[in-house]
Amino acid sequence: MSFPFNEISFNRNAVQPIECIKGGWELIRSQYWLFVGMTVVGVIIGSVVPLGILMGPMMCGIYLALFQTRRRQPIEFGLLFKGFDYFGDSVIATLIHIVPIVVIVVPAYLLFYVGMFGMMAASNGQPDPGAMLGLLGVFAIFWFLVMIAIIVLSVIFTFAYPLIVDRRLSGLNAVKLSIRAGFANFWRLLGMLILTGLMTFVGVLFCYVGAFLVMPISFAAIATAYEQVFGLGEVQPNLPPPPPSFT
Image (cartoon, rainbow, N blue to C red):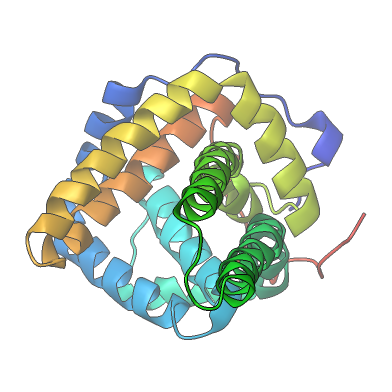
């Protein structure tokens, strides 16, 4: 069954970052290597197509497995591909997340290089050092603002895929509700994402392999945070989700 968007309540300031990470580990501990395998395959498949078109379904599959584990239901590796049952809605959520970033970043790069080559052409290949430093300074400030925007987007989009899977919301409504709940739990969610980000960074230092060992814990921590904020919805019958809605 689907849940009416306006009837879904959520808790404010409910996320406990340390408890989410601990709870995430407890959630997957007994089937840790299964979740590692699902994460590796999901990330690889999700990276094949630009703009994360396939990443959404893979994330839905991972969260579906996490929620079934939380409900003490059996899971198997093939559950990862059940995320494609939510293909349309997950793609909508992914594009809403990624497209604004692309629209900002790509023109910024173009303007930077146009400006740099324009200064070189105007000075016969010898750009003015002061002008170059000014351009680099402006670009650095711009990237600082972009990174802040990306962090904010990451926080407020945290619950989009879990809401699509657990409450069967449309992609657009899942994003809307995730934004509301994300802002209502912003600093606590940010703290949790910083901690899991640091864990992933340490994993990357070990030839990137370690990152794949940490990612399942990060996803499980988000699933735990989701439960703290929304609780788990009713057990869903094995029916295909409704078609994507743009309303």
